[in-house]
Amino acid sequence: MRPILATLLLTSTLALACGGPVTPSHERGERAFSDHAVPTAFEGLDLPWYGGLVERSSDRSMTVSYSDAEATVEQLREWWPAALADAGWTEKDRSLLGNGALMTSWTTPEGRGAHLDIRPEGSLWWVHLIVDI
Image 1 (tube, rainbow, N blue to C red):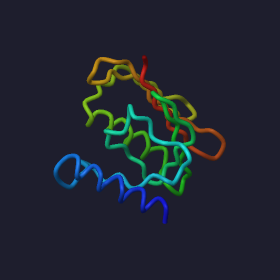
Image 2 (spheres, rainbow, N blue to C red):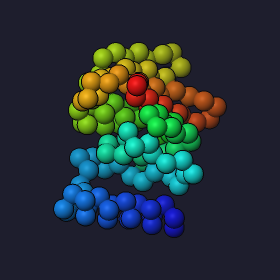
Image 3 (cartoon, rainbow, N blue to C red):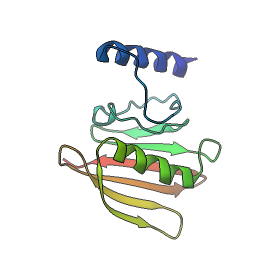
Image 4 (tube, helix red, strand yellow):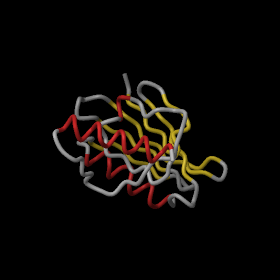
């Protein structure tokens, strides 16, 4: 119940702030309830949550975990780069590793460097998003 209430509160707040309902460019699903907040650096982005759990966060970084029940690695490797590109980020470099991990570097619309890594850790897939200082 708490994730639904938090999502409704966030959506209502954003709708009021923007003067109308917020319609994401892609369906993104809800993020799982977490004790860790989405960093302010990423709050305005339309990110592909699909049940992902924010495991760690700081001012400029976060780690989101997914089990196979929430998303496959192929979906994560498609969804996350597409969401960043839709937000105006420019991909600079991409490496796909033998274990299925994807490592990318980006430039934000403000000209900052950023990194998106999607890699396995145990039975989960972890999405690490970091914006450089």
